[in-house]
Length: 306
Image 1 (tube, helix red, strand yellow):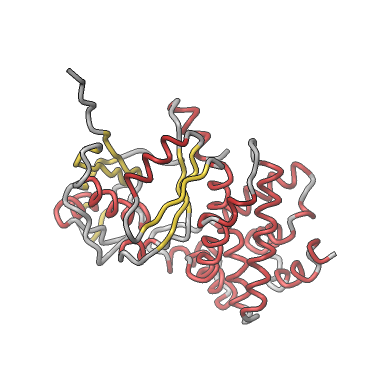
Image 2: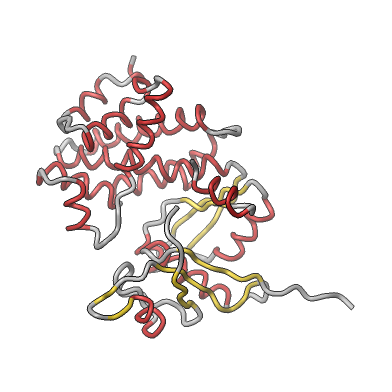
């Protein structure tokens, strides 16, 4: 008599707009799959919303009213209060927990995913079988997934594109036009590829940058993401990044400036700052008080033109 495997349990750690959007997909998918347990747990950072716990609101009203308002979560998605915080994040999790990690990155603005508008995404997995399992869990007719084995590059794309988006926002604030923004996107992509080739442990496939996690996510983030939007306001208002985060992001944080600081530290240690002028300019404008016009100077003298 064959033994029947227990259903695989799914937990979502984090409940921001993307965590909530993906909870909506997974919660609906597992209802129709015997392979996965029908209840999905989501761990959140507890917050008070007008005198009520965010966990209570999500559990009772099935809506994340702070980070994804207007979209109902499936009733089989429930809340656990969870841990804080996260080298590559996947490396840290592998080391601490001793498990395989796959990563998902793509042109996936959370509100559009929640609204079930068509998009593509990329799963990077060092063990193909696990990547295909996540594809089975997540894919819908409007959320189409490609699985690649270049997991570190997929993850790095998801971090570095936010630096480029800050640069695009600076150009929007300066009213430079779409030609300049296109140059920012192209040169930013070249720096992303160069950085990955130098710092990724394994082999880097250029084809990965043509997946949704690469050029598609870069384009979306440079036109529709929060990093672009806040960077534009940084130029127009003269306010600090911290002030604008508080005013514009409803408790969320920008990834671009912080990532630029981490990347700049690595580049400085390796003596490679001059090889990545766009990444460097974003850091210096955000943290060292360099004038925003330095963004244009870095484009004009970029090594790709020499």
